[in-house]
Length: 362
Ligand SMILES: Cc1cc2nc3c(=O)[nH]c(=O)nc-3n(C[C@H](O)[C@H](O)[C@H](O)COP(=O)(O)O)c2cc1C
Ligand code: SF4
Image 1 (cartoon, protein in one colour):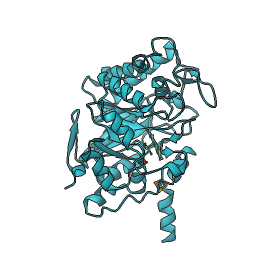
Image 2 (cartoon, protein in one colour):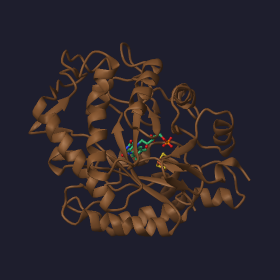
Image 3 (tube, helix red, strand yellow):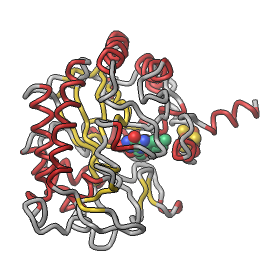
């Protein structure tokens, strides 16, 4: 049996195999940003389909941070969310998968659009001030409390794709001169404070993971070597697993790969993940254009990563792992057209547009 289908354990999380479903915006909430039966179907289909660890979300620690944002996601400060997520998680666990919640930092805070510093490509956001950071600390502590109460297996910090936390750790976006800017340790400070707040809310042993850019892929931005240094600081501060990603405005990459389609290739982040794996002693989840089982197996066997994470392949085929386990090991049917991404950016519900086209063709 392939190593990918063997159980894997880290930080108390026992996975039945090494497959992770990477966080995926789904726009399935109701108007009050609550979980709906559509979320239950999404996550139980993935669990039935054989995924080892589902990274649900992205979820929002505070509703008012995202007013006017096109993505409609569950908010962890909505009433009843612990019960809704708790019962969803119970079903996912019964079906053999583990459930982690990805949480996203503010898009707006206290009425203003924010960043680490007042640097951007298209519009100039305002830098986070002390009060903003205090509000974030409180919201992340509450998120930890809610997720622990809902018996989630852990939390993943969204610290990538140019969000405010990824800008804090980036030397390009963070030009602060206070204790949150300058050296890599200073740039990591807010993320590490949030890790401590989550543990305050959820308990010291609650697993806190991170999805961070493996490089800013831009002139003057964080290189992969700097990302590796940042990763080891974050691990020292309590992060228990890393999913290296990419993308953001002004970068040569979007979260789903190089902007120039001719540069897109299968496993476009494998070597970047391997660089980070080289310096950390926690599991690295390799994500980005992985479509063939042979390549995934090689990643693990050659020590370039520990876990195999996918997003689009599971939109196309929620039962992909079960299919592979049953002996049909042909590649994922996802053609990486990004039709699903375009739909969600428009605020529409997550779906594979290609699957529908194929079904229409018969
Ligand atoms: C429709 C869609 C929604 C996504 N939503 C998120 C998200 O909420 N959080 C996140 O960190 N990444 C998100 N991503 C990025 C994916 O998790 C993943 O990193 C990227 O698509 C590369 O993996 P893949 O080639 O297996 O799709 C999204 C990607 C797509 C296509
Ligand atoms: S819409 Fe395209 S990228 Fe998205 S899951 Fe379907 S085939 Fe893959």
